[in-house]
Image (cartoon, rainbow, N blue to C red; front, side, top):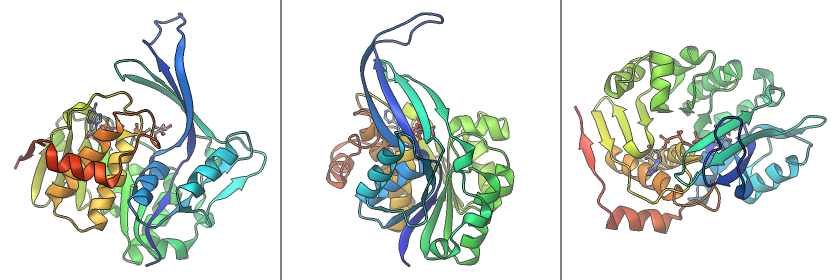
Amino acid sequence: MKYDVVGLGTVVVDHLVLLAQHPPQDAKTNIISDAYQVGGPVPTAQVVLSRLGKQCAFLGSWGDDQYGPLIAQDLATEQLNLDASRLLPGTRSGYAQVWIDEQASTRTIACYRPEHWLQPEDLDRQIIQQARFLHLDGWPQETCLQAAQIAREAGVTVCLDAGSLKPGMETLIPYLNVMNCPRRFLSEYLQTDDVLAGGRALLDQGPELVTVTDGVRGAWLFTEEGCLHCAALPVLSLDTTGAGDVFSGALLYGLLEDWPRERVLKFACVTAALKCERLGNRDALPSLAEIEAALQTKELNLSQLD
Ligand SMILES: Nc1ncnc2c1ncn2[C@@H]1O[C@H](COP(=O)(O)OP(=O)(O)O)[C@@H](O)[C@H]1O
Ligand SMILES: O=C(O)C[C@@H](O)[C@H](O)C(=O)COP(=O)(O)O
């Protein structure tokens, strides 16, 4: 295998804006500080994996505006292979503005730019076939489906970080081996707020492993062995942007390492929690040593629910 994880997804530049508190409607507030960082569910998960020593290739595209060089340089610095990625001349890059107040509550507005989505005919079959895992964010449906089919035929594990509900996901889910989603996805897709029923219903639709995340309420992991819940590691949370993406990256790391499901879930929860102590998703990422130290020294509440 040439790559541990090939990722197909949306890349954006996040403008992170720190505020004392969110302004009420029709009012103004001052910015305390701000920063630009590259984000997006798949690239962020891949940066987590790459920093932990996994070989990753990213399939995506960006524009030739002021953010293009920032994206290309960031992904290359993070050691993601970009041979199957491209700059689209005459287009603007994906962008998001994330407002974060002193309670770490966020408001995000994002502009994903569909002109950057790869089409099924753009897919590099070989790079997918040479991966252990394929990681998707669900945009756009036809391309994800085609990539998932190529991967399944080649015995590559197909993973999805579902984020929010996107068109055609019901067609993609049967092709998945691994699926991560936030709890709100269960309401959007299955019209349920019951995590146990929702997680089991997703398992019934195809994936062998499903995780559901819910911020400070921690995360659940479902397999045919049942459901595990891990409480969130208590941290002084400054910024939760990208916590789900970081959780996904750490989850894939544990699965690539073939760890037991208990360790996989604890590792993902701890990595995502430590990220929340700092701003963003690059400088905020904990090292393997920090993650291992927290796993050894902090009490983590893990329970088998069925
Ligand atoms: N404030 C927090 N304290 C500790 N851990 C957190 C916190 N927020 C998120 N996490 C961890 O990150 C995971 C993903 O966060 P979540 O907010 O559910 O995802 P998303 O960023 O996709 O909305 C959670 O399951 C939890 O383990
Ligand atoms: O895609 C988004 O939701 C916004 C991105 O700008 C951000 O980088 C991101 O991926 C946040 O993800 P999450 O907080 O893990 O859901």
